[in-house]
Image (cartoon, rainbow, N blue to C red; front, side, top):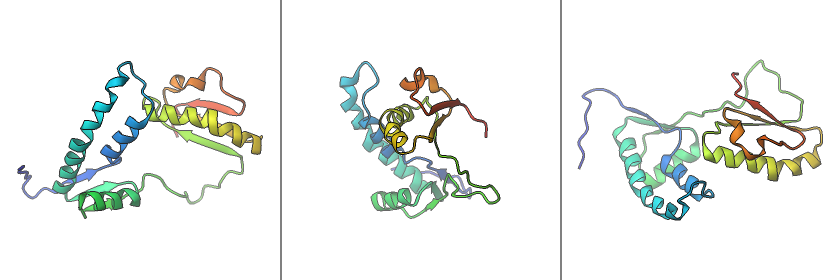
Length: 167
């Protein structure tokens, strides 16, 4: 049994990702490393990661997640009730007009393999279908390290790589 105390200090935990679920999603992606046959052994890390997350949430006064879905999942699977939702996106910014341009924007850090896989899937599988329906549309890919996306060297028509965008 673990004992933990910071006296009267309050403990707040920011779970921007439910790490054990993120880890399982990453494991489900196609292997991108030379010793891929060892990949099934990585699933052995899921349960300890779950227990560690549960302990961290239990010891905190409040744990923050980005969605109601994550809050409900943690309450259901961990039996914790100290979860608060703080969305990491805003649905609308007052005073800023919406664009009428037909743009699709994908923002990600491409040092993170799932973002590379998602961007390439969007470019190769989704974008051609959307471009046929809406030929004036444009796909904008933003974020650092775009050169690792396979389509970066020869992007299809209507796809533009913006690099890092400061605002």
